Length: 85
Length: 422
View 1 (cartoon, rainbow over the protein chains, first blue to last red):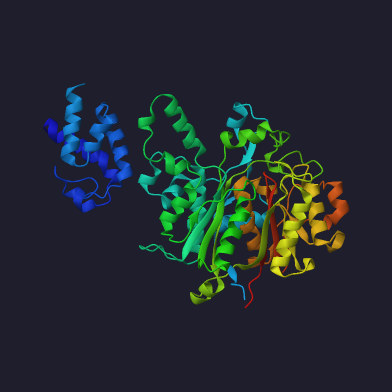
View 2: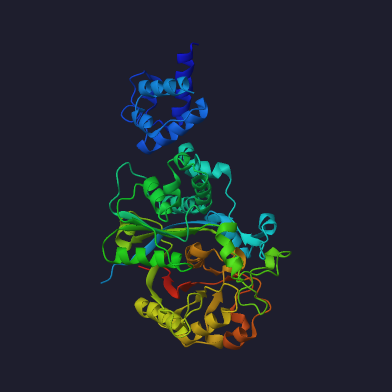
C-alpha cells in the first residue's frame, strides 16, 4: 500500500464507530461527506479529530478542524500536519 | 372527576437486585446488598461499607450502543437508563421511530457523572480542555439521565430531571402523577437514580452521618429503627415506573400494578426545628395528612407504611410523626418496614426504589421483612409495639401502602398507592 492508501485505511478505521450509514461507508470515496453522507452526529466530529491526533501523533488546530468535513479535506489536513511535524 | 393514574410498568437497579425478578426475591427474603469496599478503606473513610448494584459489561451493552459507551463514565445515566428502559418494556410499550408526544419523563438525580466530571477537571487543569471529547456535557449535566432516556425511547412530551435530595424519587413520581392528572400527558416515565463511590459519599462520611461500626459486619450495618442504629449506610441505583392515565392503560389492555390515589410534597421551610439537615416535624405530619386527604381515605385504611427510616437517631422522630399524623399507635398502627435495611440509603434513588418495593407488595400481596431491627429502639417500641415491624415475610392481602421520603433542605414527599379496582 502507498502512504495515501495506508492513511485512508487508518482514517476509515477511525470514523467507523461513528457512522450511521453503512452503505455510504462501504462506498467511501474522497468526496464522501462525514455529516451528509455518513450521517455522523456533528458533535462526534470532535471525537474523530481527537482519534486522528492520537493515531498520527499530530495536533489539529481549531481552524483546520473546521475544514475536516469530508474525506478529502481530512486527508489534506493530516498530510499538512505530518509535513510540519 | 379526577383523571385516575395507574402504574403499568416498573424497573429497578438496586444493590440487592438488578431487575424486578431478582429484586423481588431479595425483597421477600430480606437479602442485604451491603458490602465492604476496600478502596473506601484505602482512602481513609470511616464508613467503608455501602450498596452498589452489580452491572456487568454485557448488561451495559444490552442498553447502550458501542458509541454511547465510548468514554462513558456516568453511574446516574447507567442505572437510570437500565431501570427506565426496563419499566418501558415491562409496560408493553413500543419504541417508536417518531417522537411520542403523549409520553414524557421526569427522572430525578442528585448528581450526574461525578466520575466523568472528575476526569474532565483533571483534563482542564492539565491545560487539555480541547481534548475532553464531545460527551462530558451530556454525561455530567444534571438532566443527563432524562436526556438519554428521552432519546432511547423517543419521548416527545416533557423530558426533565428533578432534584430534591433524598425526596427526589418520591417527588418525581408525584410530578408525573400531577402532569397526567392535569391532562398534559398520557404516560410519564418517572423515577430517579443515584451515583456511588468516594466522591459522592465522601461528604456524608465527613458529616459523620454514616455508620462506622460495621466495617467488619456489612450485612448488619444498616439498622433502621434499631436501638444500635449508628448512622446510615450509603447506597445507589435507580427505580423507575410508567405512570399512565387509566383510560390509556385500559385502551391498550395493559397490566396494572397499582393505582396512585393521592400524594403531597411540602417543605418545613427550615423553621420550627427544621434545618438544612433536620426535619420540621409539623411539616412532616402535614405532608402525610395532606396525602391522605388527597387520597380521600381514613388513616386506618393503610395496610402498611414504607418509611424513610435511614438508621440515624432521627428514626424515633419519624415514627412519632407517623403516629401523630395518622392518630394511630400501638396495635392500631399499620405495619411499617424500611427497605434501607437491605439496600442502604440510596439517596436520590431511594424514593423510587422504595416505591417499586411498595407497589410489589400490593401486586403480590406480601409485606417484606425489615431486617436488623431485632434490638428495636425503646422509643419506637413504646409508640407502636414490636409486632408492627415485620421481621419475616408476611403474606396477606395488601390494599393500601403509604410511602414517604424526606430530604436535606427540609423537604418531604408522601404517596398513597392502592390496589387497582375498577
